[in-house]
Image (cartoon, rainbow, N blue to C red):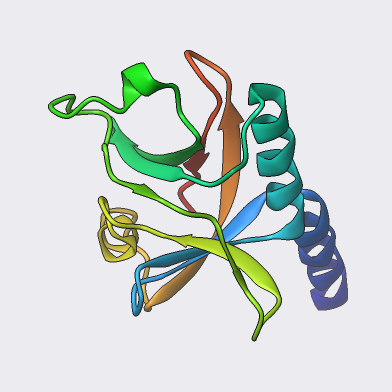
Length: 137
C-alpha cells in the first residue's frame, strides 16, 4: 500500500502543476509542469513571464503572470500592485518568484500548514484573465 501511494504521489508531482512555498525567504518555487503553463500563457499574451503578481481573493491566495494593466491599480482590495520577476536559480536548477504581499508565511498560516515550507497543488483559472490559485492541502 505504501508503494502504491508513493507511485501516485510521484505521478502527481510530474503531471500536476505544483509549487513549493517557503516562508524563510518568502519564495515560491514552481515545478516543470507549472513552468510550462506559465510560459505558454505568457506566449499567448505576447509577453515574457517577467512579472508575477500575488494576491488574495476571498479565502484563496494566488498569482498571475503579466496581468493586464487594469488589474494592477493600487487601491483594489483583491489585487496587489507589487510585481516580482520569475527568476532562475542556477544552484538548484529551478524557477521561482518572491511572494511580497501576501507573503509565503501568511499563506502557510492561513492554510493551517505546520512547518516552514509547503508543497501545494495549483489550479488554473481563466476569468477575467489567466491566474493561478494555491489549493489548500
